[in-house]
Image 1 (tube, helix red, strand yellow):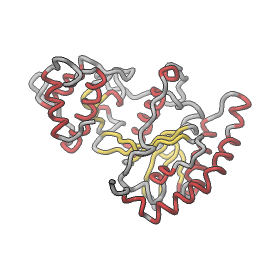
Image 2 (tube, one colour):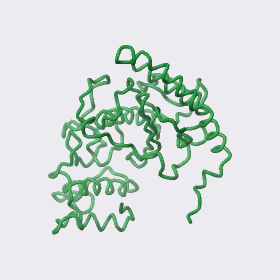
Image 3 (cartoon, helix red, strand yellow):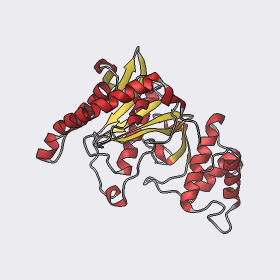
Image 4 (cartoon, one colour):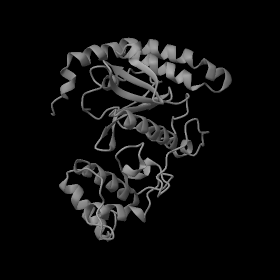
Amino acid sequence: MPDDPAYLSLASYHRCAERIQAKWLPFLAAREDRLRQQARHGIAMEKTAEGIIEDLFAEVLDWRQGDLDHQVEHADIVLTQNFIKYLVIEVKRPGALAWRRTAVQAALDQARRYADEQRVSRLAVSDGVMLYAADIENGTEHDRVFVRLDRATPPLALWWLSVHGIYRPREGTEDRALIEESPAAAAVALPSDGPVELLHPKYKLPARCFAYVGNAADPHTWKLPHLDSCGAVDEKRLPKAIQAVLTNYRGVKVGGIPEPAIPDVLAKLAQAAERLGKLPGQSGAPAPVYEQLAEAISQLRRTG
C-alpha cells in the first residue's frame, strides 16, 4: 500500500481542514444569500461573485480580509501577504464560466496575462459557481485545485490555496483537474465582459493555441502554434511544431524556449497528437514525426 502524501501529516493541514469543515455550511448559506439577485432577475453582477470569493478566502480559509487586494494592475483580486503576491484571481459574473470551456479558457488567458505582468506564479478563475487554480511552471500551466462552490461536501483540497498551502508544490490528484463541460453547455455563447483578447501579431491566435507561453502579456514569447482559434488541433501546424523541437522545421529549430520547459511542451504536443489519433498504437502507420514524439515522451517518462 503506498504511503499517504506527506502533507496529510502537517499540523497546518489539519487545522485548515477543520476550519473548512466548520465553515463550509455557513459559506453555502452566505453564498445563496448573495445570489438572491440572480434568482430574482436572472443575472447577477461580477461584484456578487467577488463577494463569494472574499467569503471563501477570508471565512472558509485562513486569509485575512486585508490580504485580498482588489484591482491590482487590472487583476480583480490578488492574494498578498507581507508584500508578496501569491495568487492572481480573475472573477466573472455568476454562471459565466460554469460549464463553458471557451469562457473558462478566455478567463485563464486573461488571468495569465495579469500574473505574468506581476510575476506571480499562481492564478485562478471563478464565477462564484466553480473555482479553478493553476501553477505556472516553465511557461505552462499545471492544475492545482478545482472545486465546485455549490457542493454540499466541504472540499478539503482548498487547503492548497490556504496561507500555509499556497506556496507548497501540489501533491495528490483529488480535486485537481479542471472538469470539462458537456458539449451542449460549450455551445452556449456568452457576451464578452472582459477586454479584447490579445492575439499573436503573425498568427492571429490567442496564447492558449501555443505549446509554450513565456509571458502571456508578450506574444513574442509564444512559441509553437498547434491549435486553431476554437481550440481544435491544427493538423497542419502540429507536425511542424513537433519537428521544430525534436529535429527542425525548414532547417531551423525553435528558439526562445528554456530547456527545462521542453518536457512540458512535448507533453502538450503529445496530448494534441493523441486527440488526433496520430500516436503509435492509435494509427496503423504513424508518420515518423509522431514516432519520434512518442519515443521522446517515453524517455521523459511523460506517458499518460
